Length: 332
Ligand code: MLT
Image (tube, rainbow, N blue to C red; front, side, top):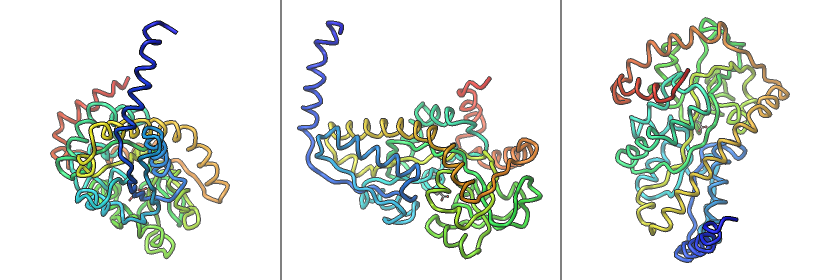
């Protein structure tokens, strides 16, 4: 070991001990929209573990999966008012409270998990976090990378936009997602996440979209038969903390929370890469049929980008801003 490292090691250890001795015992509540086994739960679990490690067990995070603490959109309100500490929820359910976040939900903007990571952890993500504090009273401290949202339905294999016509599809209460389905020629049914399983089961709706891991965690395979492997929206699911709660912490505890969030984010990235393929195989083994969209999804991409993007330029900071973001991804 180099001399400098040797000298710094005891210093770093004593700083760690000092930090944890400056932390008071407390237990936070973390709302989770999805069931255990999903990517949201993995992020929250990793966060809780890191938090406990960094505080010698003084700070704990209790996890409440399956929307036990309320529907995802309601948890944003509760956190803003300081009634809830943390929530993990889909980004599309944050957008109604902080519109500029919509840039991450534009159809076909994000083309890979690496791009999702680059955007969320780079300047774009930092700016959006400032905006959610300002607009919604919540701070993003971590991200779950949940994979592309695929389309499921109970009626027929859907390869083309023609196949999609006539199906009743549930979407979150999110304008961009509604507009995307409109561009694809259907009128979707916006429904809260907590009502989705029952609506699928009772055939009030025929289908919905969510990532493979979410489909499995929510047991949608019990009520859906077909999957179309579309890639219109990479599902990002932030871990948010109530800004009131964050500001009530000591600077040491704030730093611990931020560090634990970042480490949990890294875990989420690895979890997706290690797990998605296996889950896909399990869904097929459970009887689901997966098809690819025809013609490399070209009609879907063309309809969504030409009709949806222009409608939301203002919301995301203008066309130039969007062009800048795309340029920053350094696509070849
Ligand atoms: C939604 O479809 O409302 C969300 O993406 C569900 C989720 O949080 O997984």
